[in-house]
Each structure stands twice: as structure tokens, then as C-alpha cells.
Image (cartoon, rainbow, N blue to C red; front, side, top):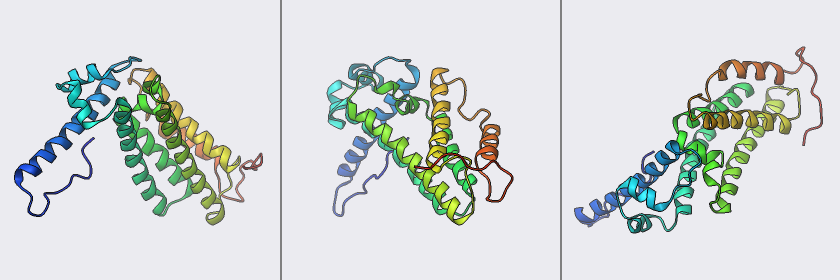
Length: 228
């Protein structure tokens, strides 16, 4: 999890100024990486700024020079999750592909990201946000809602352009797919990160895809329930 958007040396600026900025950005990343590491290692334990400062090797005052509050630290990690996922989701949607392929790629992206970032999974499931500011829970909820909206978009495009007919309504199917992915992430956290969210995923996706999505005119059971 590296720093993003590092500014270059201003025209006429000194090397000392550039070095100072680099050090500040680097320290900020160190704080976020330490927080993610502590989230991975701690089970249900609330992380204090004092403990985080010890992990980073700085004073609490030094933490607050980079972040005004612990809430802002969590927000920075959520921003990292958002940026990483949605940059790639945008690419997936813009590239050619069948509806089931696009849905699979979006969900697989989410599971791979979770697998590689166990500490952040505690934020994604909301476990690490218990007792923290309410807006953090709301923001994580909005992230999953946005992903579900992207799946709906893919499914609706598939209905219109590729003649796909989901076995259930688009909204219901998108919700089911997201619930499946979120459930796998939850299992990953509960197992202490021993059981990868990617385990059996390929086989499970084949089952989901075969029974829930098919081209119009196939022998699949007709769609049930009105869409919303």
C-alpha cells in the first residue's frame, strides 16, 4: 500500500524542501501500513493511538501531525480500498466481455483484494469500526452498495445488448452475488485469515453462473419475480 499522488519538487524549490515533503508522505504511509498490520494481527481488539504510535515508533503527537484523528486514519484506509477497487471495476466495465465474465471479474477482483489485504478486511466487514465514528460504517456500506450498483449495470446491459435473462430479477441477482462475496470475506476474517476467500471460488462461480444467468432462448428455468 504505497503513497499516491506524491508531488514533485516545485520550480525553484530546494532539495531540502522536496526531501521534507517526501519524509512526511513516507511517514503517513508508515502509519497507515502499521494500522493495517495491527488490524491483521489483532482479533476484535480496539486499536488505540498509543499502541499505534508504539508500532510506528513515534510519539502520539507525531501521529496527529499527519492525521487529526484516528477516524481520519480509518478514512484514509477506506479511501485506499475505494480507489483500488473502483479504478479496476471501471476498466472491467469499459472492456468488452460477456455479462457473466464481467460479473465474475468484478467479484474475483474483490476477493483477491481481500485475500491480499487481511487487515483491511476487518474494516470491510465493519469489525474494526465498532465503537468508531458512525460515518466510517456508513462509508463502508456505501462502498458495497456502489459495487452492487455496478453489478446491476452489467446485468442490465447484458439483458439489453447480449440477450441474457437472469433466473431472478436484476436487483435480486446483484444482491445475491454481492452477499456471496461479502460472506466469503466474513468467513476469511472469522477463520483468522486461514481460509482464503478465493478457495473453491472458481467452482462456486460456475454453479452460480450456470443456474442464475443464461442466454435468452436457452432451456434455463424462466425468470421469477419482478425486478426493482
